[in-house]
Image (tube, rainbow, N blue to C red; front, side, top):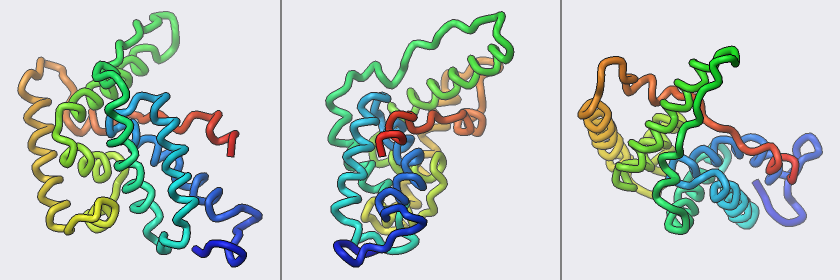
Length: 199
């Protein structure tokens, strides 16, 4: 990517708009999984792409996700202290027994709330690596690039994070409680439509 007069446009879109359309949903999920509530994640997403707009020339082809997620992690760290701790464990609405698929929707909400709570209990370095690897699918190399750490450190943190999360999940498990794989597979919220419309 290039900046200034030499910026390359693709299909009539600027490089920044292309980045936003390709990666905004995932960057917003990273902000949420790093402990921000939805409203604060909206603000954080704007900050992430403000940084991206200022540093387009620093983003190497193929490293776009790593760059954006690294910025998202740093933005989340700054913003997280501004929101209340109980935002990680929102109250679940009562399912509407008359609505089709109500039980399945409620179970998905419960899994997502459980995942948010368990992630919130992990130390930040472990939580961040787990989110990037297991929720967003980054490779260890991409995680190392995003966080500016050695790849071996990324691998070590990921192992420790999985052990810690599984221990928390199984320590108080009741019969029928979701397994780690099902919790991690819970549907994720997407970027709010008003943010897409604003770009």
